[in-house]
Image (cartoon, rainbow, N blue to C red; front, side, top):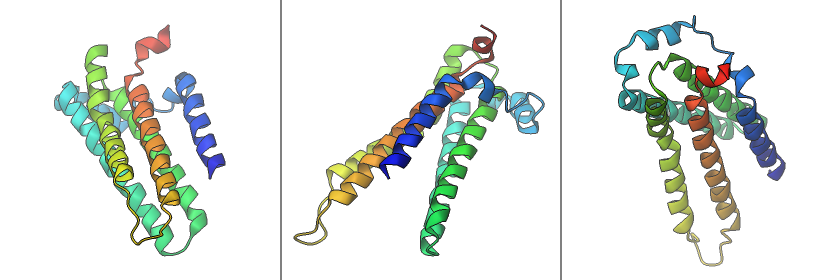
Length: 176
């Protein structure tokens, strides 16, 4: 499990330093990018941020549902595939939303902060659950539950920072 966490952290670091090639995956001719560029409401940083927040919530919900189904049907090897698809889907969505944004850097930052605050709130929820963790019966060892919450905290912080970096990467930075 620690190897998987280490690979995830290294992947996030590599992604953050290699944004230029990854940002070219989505072209300006993408239908969703065109649709959002023409939507007046999306160019408002607060409305765009709320939309990003909702996109993050929907993607997270689908990923959790996929994990639940994999566990329910006892297909443990599918867990990694579901997690990988969740990460790829999130980054792809963030790149689409990034390419569709046409506002200033400051408003781009507002949109990114509002949208990625989903993961900040999720971090606070996990920290609260970890802080209030109590054994279900006397003598129960809560170490593994605590480790799960620590992994949850790390993953939500990584998701928050990656969402913020991807949505705030502008085309002007790519030209320099």
